[in-house]
Length: 315
Image 1 (cartoon, rainbow, N blue to C red):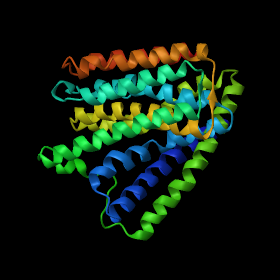
Image 2 (cartoon, rainbow, N blue to C red):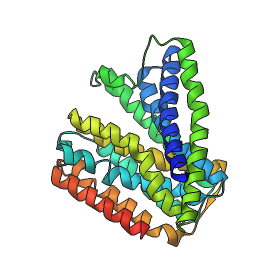
Image 3 (cartoon, rainbow, N blue to C red):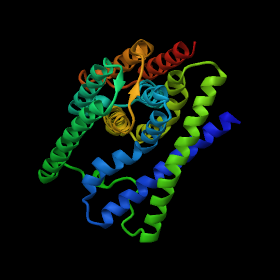
Image 4 (cartoon, rainbow, N blue to C red):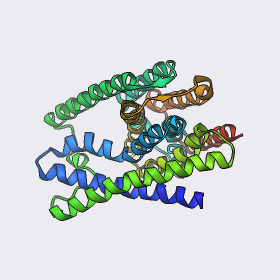
């Protein structure tokens, strides 16, 4: 039954996160917040809500391994699995898109996270640093987007956030918000409890469960989005989705969770996984800087690397 509860918790999390995004997006648009700002901030935070709730619940329940493992494992899965599987299905023409600035911001967030990890705890001091960097990056992204729009370089269709419905009635907006706010903590509670119990059953650490079961589960929305982007030949969306998600995982999720509850850990237990996360991030260099397309051969390589990593973690 514990596996059933884990799957149920994950399902509730994903559905509640989707409901919260729809409610928040349409509430923001109805009160006059520009669609561009909603896309860059509210949607980004909303889609990270499941991971954030899991990390907060795990930190509060003295299971920092699940909280940190979720983020580290998700970032690794985002590059190796979320880019690898769609690339097997169809070639992603990443060579025609410029994601250099976003990638450099992601790498800065990754290196900052690794530097803070040397302290063997993520506490309120770490949280303030991470959230301050996130605020600066968001401000820079909004400024760039507004400048492009004024120059007429921004596609109006790209400004329309996902789930936007200008005619959505107030009662429906309220219902989506209510379902999201109730479902997220419920799903996170179920998943964290189940994950902790599974760790005890198989005599493995919380970190292993966070790096594998929880990380893969919370990466499923990114995988679905990237698969759809690949099928629509939107390589920039696929690559941008992974870069943005990884940056938010490190800065927003760990930033908020560490302010709410400190997360101490033993660095030697996570050294290998932190190294793999960094190596996976560096594997994106050919697609970002060297104008290489993400071909099927690359997709097979990335997917095999991820399978090998999961096996190494479990064994």
